[in-house]
Image (cartoon, rainbow, N blue to C red; front, top):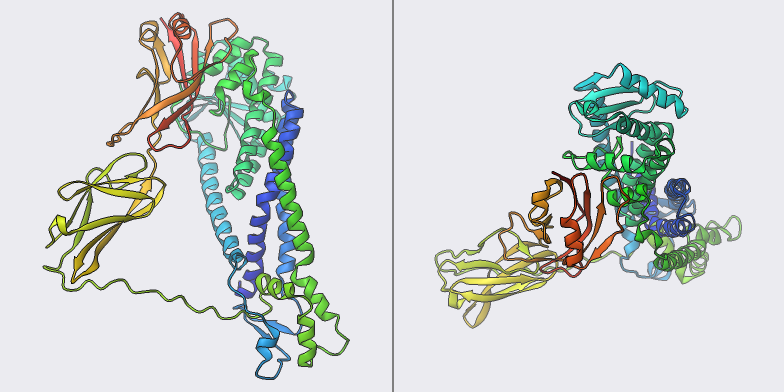
Length: 604
């Protein structure tokens, strides 16, 4: 049964592991990015490095936890640690001034919350693991629900390609009515699922390309590695650099599969067009446990890479990574020095080096042992709790003003005119009224990042500058003194992401007649009642002509140049158009948002 005596070292070790992982993951990611720049053209090496980097982060954290757990164990001196972390001296010093001679006063520091950090982290990880378990169950259910075994030439073709790739086990092909693209499930008995009816729509060459992609996932054991990666992502969910590391692994995993497919299917344009056609038909949410041929991350970059057009982002010098690497190394060095000299065991050993047999029998011996270094007091007190802390006096909280003598039991009401949320960068009109009071007698102000102004009888406008919470306070003058009549708190949020469109057209198949209507990229706020504007800052455009090499990427600063727009209007049936990295600024935004991409295929 877990008690506070056993839970405290565990939670403390978890908390310190969390703290150390912040710089450990940053250092690992910085080294990975430098190596990625060196091996920029070798997808297999970069993928292996990304997987290795994630496992290094996990192993490093595991070692850190083991060390911190050892450090968090009670030191066996002349002290007994109770479950509430209140120590008792076996040989208690005598005298009225014993406490003041032994211990120095100290206030609560951030280290006192380390156990709570560990507990919160573990709870979040457990919840994310439960979510992953649900996704795994859904993926397993796809294998059995609504599926039909594929037989005949299709299965024979699958067996031939599997043998060609060196896969020894049997791979089954199934048709499913609950998916919209081919995907791979399982490790011991892998299956490849195709949407019902898709096999009849594909040419033999297209089917072979898709089968090759899925079979490569099986040969590379990507299903197992992806499952382990998901567990690590759930464990280090809080670190943005670890998420970037995982994203790189997924991207390079698809690149590796594409490279193998292109070795057996030299028609690059055919493979790129097959993936593009599938991407344009996707309407369902992805499951994290399945392996599929398309993927939504950097899809345009991946298509350009298949057909031989490099991305400009892959050629950028990693100057920021050098700075990140330097900061991570410096932070790790500081932590190492502090941990090497300021641990409770270090000072406890100094205490235990007193003459044998003394066991702190005299007050003077204990005082001298504990006064070796003033750092010893704070380190032992903050990290393990061997020295009892000075009791913290509870803060005095002033009672809120008593609302008495209100006429007619006055109640203050703040009613938003549009929504029960305040948005940054736009006008938020509200009505404010208090029963028994004239609006002219009210004084209204806000507590938080914002301001309020009167716009009419009992009507006010609130403007906010930062997300969080904002309170509207209503005062009046009574007997020459200011009285608080009421206070209402509101959530403050930024304007939701708009939906990108190309002249009111979204991704999909469009006709040549509709293509002529496309003139500009817009960002529309749907179901948003406030007066807000969103302006397109920039985006990239890529044209993929039918059976031809693709055009280079064009960076458009908000508005199409006439030459590029004329070229888009001249696209013919079978051509494809990609608009990605759409960046937009809405009211109240300090930096631009990335809305993703649009993809169009032209038909007659």
